[in-house]
Length: 262
Length: 311
Image (tube, rainbow over all chains, first blue to last red; front, top):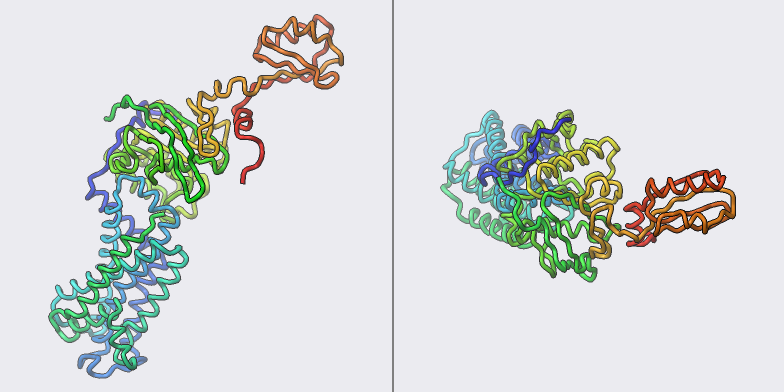
């Protein structure tokens, strides 16, 4: 091992911020896609639910719920909403919780990447993952005979609002609870909303005031909104969009206020 | 290229940091000159890591003045962070990341990083391949954390216990890198529990105890006189100590702590040893079991911080 003179001579400096954010987004996405548990959550479960419940008459769906079409016409919008929940909420909460626990956030805080740059990187990584999920799930749904309606811009807007709402709540959880508690709680919320968020069981099947209440949850509002556009061809369901925007503002503000970096 | 500024790399005066009712750092003074290696020594809980983390800008001090590369580490963090390299005690690395992948990522956050492949090769990380961080050996993890601290070509590097738990080969490789950094003009501040590490590497040693710097100086001059050098030998009991004392250089002393066991203190060097053996030869004494011991940094450390165990 012969040292080249001056090899370590100081030459400090930060990379351009756009390059740092792109690098952070790339590594976060790679970490996410490399992890088996995360793939189970973001890819395997939504795809499996879509195929299973489209093909089998496990949950009865009447003609109005199917929008006069196939079972997949009810299921596909809900599964897209579930994909948003799995990536922006559950996946992000668990990953960020463990990054905090393992000191990754602390380590990055000493690097030239500013905190807001780290958050931009995380957001970009969520969006890239979401794009991949949407492409896959759309392809599968089309194979199953899905005939989507409506304006793609409205769909994108609803999904972005949903992702913002889920991210705020996920980061709030990751930044305040212990990593193990986040792991358990984020999975529990995922399962509960899977059943009670109007993804595979129509909200109308629940008694009393429950359907109205459940439609206000982030997943309930997103599934309902996406269904209004994709199944019924509505322009933009303002009530659902407003509910998601409210969750986004509340969640992101609380996360910004209470997130502990160490 | 940054030229080394006139101001010290680190300048702390009366630094204070409290956590609730405990005072972790209690009026600590510290000056680190540019392009030197400074070792911060101290018992567990002495305030070493807190001091380093104050310098890294992780938290604001509750009192005192702190400048790192002439900057306030908290208020001017955005300016400071690109210029420093940090090795945390616990990795701070994605469990699923590959060694070179992580190194490349952190290199990409800097403007003029080191060559990643050469650095990985230099620190024996090139062979880690696709193994995720969580399955690397302890030594590989430590070396990756070290590589991350230097890859951005910083002016000042903070290493928190860089060789804890390393095998001798890895320790020496780490020492070699620290020496090369210093030779190239990088300032290094490290904490350690290993006295030989401080003696081996440091230009300056700072002993921290109960949140204060209780001694600072070059390893050899530190605590001069606090622990005397000593030469011991065995011979027949009841030697004429007055005669031997007269033969010894000024400032030396000889005693017979137990019959036949002699202890000479003073400036223990070749001259003293030659004097003692010459006197023994003149007096027909077969000096046996001659041992010399210079006071080590460890002696000074234990003398200053006490020998009782700390929780």
